[in-house]
Amino acid sequence: MAFNKSMKFIAILVFWLTFVSSLHAQKDTALQSRVNRLAYNAIRITYSPIQEIRKYAAASLYDSLEEILSLEQSYLLSFDSFKNVSVLASDDDRVKIFTWNYISDSGYFTVYGCLLLNPKYHQEYFYALKPFTKAIDTNYQVLNANNWYPALYYDIFQYKYKRKCYYLLTGFNGTNPWLDERLVEILHIDKRDGPQFGLPVFFGVKEREKPKSRLVFKYATEATMVCRVEKKDKVLVVSHLVPVRWQRHGDFEYYAPDGTYDVFRYKKGKWQRFDMPMNFQGNQRERLEAE
Image (cartoon, rainbow, N blue to C red):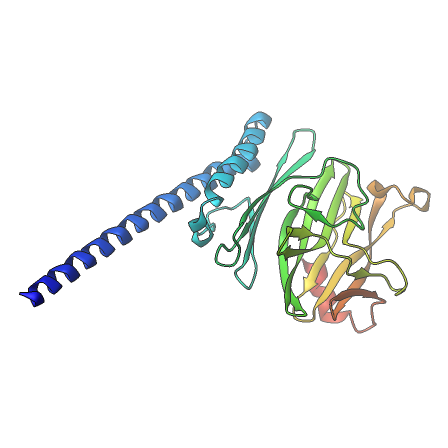
């Protein structure tokens, strides 16, 4: 009799576990379907010929993603269906960052962003990124999610220093119809203050110079510049920008690459700029110029 009761209890337990698991699976499937529908609708941000539709689609995506990413299980969802939204994930599977932009008919950009941390490691895991509104010296400021330098991020490079994780982000922003920007900064997660954007680790050739918290490169919209990390070598490579005419010094709408590169090498927590050696040509230069 006792044996039959035990078997009955086990059977009921298995049934309930299966039932609950099935409910969770259905819920996750429904959530994934919602993400896929969002991705499909987000295409309008880029391809709709009507400005108001693009603007509304960009803003509504921000609200919809905030609702979904606020759910703990959202970190496990796939976002591969997004084609015109940048979704970057760190190698340690602790950070995902979403950025996208709306472009007006007159050529002005508005950038949106969300940051998602793995809830397995962070109690507070979702952050809506809000661009800074006051004029600040962005070269030396450390910013946060409520005071963010907007950029459409296109790469993330994770590294460790003194057992802490840092994420080097490279991004782009079309400031206005005549001026583009490339941004390089460090994201790190502070236990007390949460996500911090910027870290004074970018040093010039002269070591006595005050280190910058981020690198911002401004240049003419018609130009194309290289700004990327050679991850294997831990080297940041950027096009050297100069005014197309010396009379335009300081007018960044007239700046363009001159065919040479500025190089920052990582060592012991610092990104130190150095004069590019002669052997940084050949295959590496050909690959950079091809891209």
